[in-house]
Length: 113
Image (cartoon, rainbow, N blue to C red; front, side, top):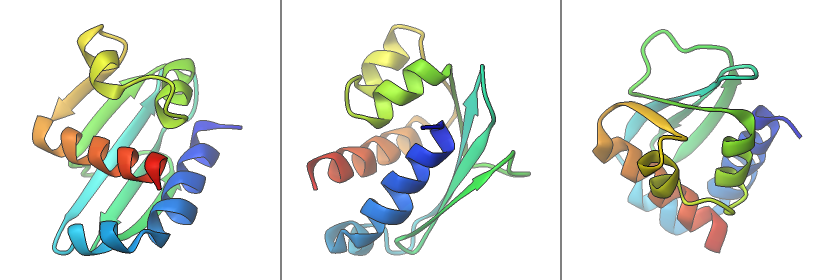
């Protein structure tokens, strides 16, 4: 399964069904650019508790996260903590760490939901 397909499943199928997450993200509008060093880039648009995953590069992302496909797969499957990946240099973040932590919160809620 590609990183794009994993993101679509996580955000458009799972996260969009978590009511608590929808209300928590009210007024929150961000674009998370996912750069895959050995694959295709994609991005997640979060707007008012809805999620849209698209292939390619967004022209004005809020946050850019870069890792190889193996690291992304582990993060998205809940096998690797994104903070640990960042601290070990496996995940690079360009932009607000606050936005990165919000993305982690979303991923954690999806994993536990």
